[in-house]
Image (cartoon, rainbow, N blue to C red; front, side, top):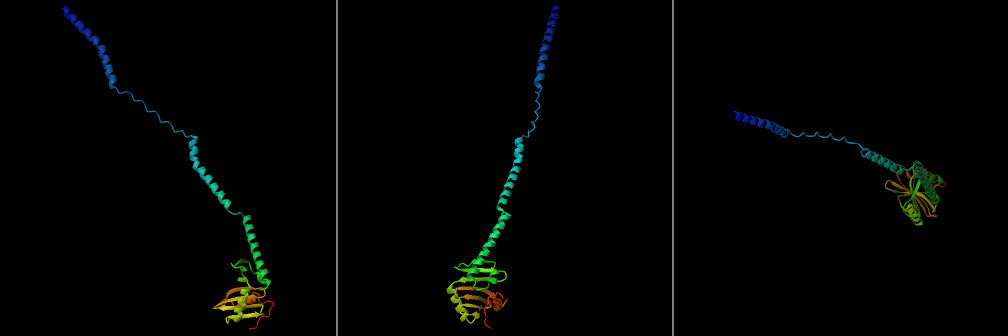
Length: 225
C-alpha cells in the first residue's frame, strides 16, 4: 500500500515538475505564432522650397524681361532721332537746290530765270554735261551741253517737215518736232552748244501754248503763224 502511494506521489511530482516546462513551451509557441510588429512607415519629409528653386522659377521671367529690354534698346538705337532726320532732310533740300542752281548757271541762256525757279531737282542723266530736271509746274526737261548735239538738233528743227520753229536767229532756236501725238519742245543755243528739250502730249496741250507758258519766248520776237 505504501509502495503504491509512493509511486503515485512520484507521478504527481513528475506532473507538477512538467507544468512549468509546458508553460514555457506554450509561451514560446505563442511568440512564434504572433507575427513581428511592422514598424509604422516614416512620414514623408515635406518638400523644402529653397531660394534656389524660387530663383530657378523666376529665372525665365527675368530672362524674358531682360531680352525684351535689350530688344527695345536695340530697336530704339536703330530709329533715327528727329534731329538726325531733320538734318538729313535739310541737307537733301540743300543739295537739290545746289544742283538746280548749277544747271541754271550753265543753261541760263535757254530760258528765263523764272523758269529755273520752278525746278525742284536736277540729276545727272548719265552722260557728261547732261541733266534731267523737273518741277511740279513745268514738268521734266533734259539739258545737254554739247556742240555736236546742238548742231544736229538745229538741223532737225530746220529740215524736218514735222518740225515747227517759233524763233530762229541762227544762234538761238525755239520750236518743236512732232512724232505722232508727241511733241518734243526744243530750245538751242548754238554759240554755247546748249540744248533743252521736253516731251509733251499734243492731246493735252498745244506745244506753242506750252512754249509761251514756260516763258521760252520771253524777250524775243517769235515768228508769226
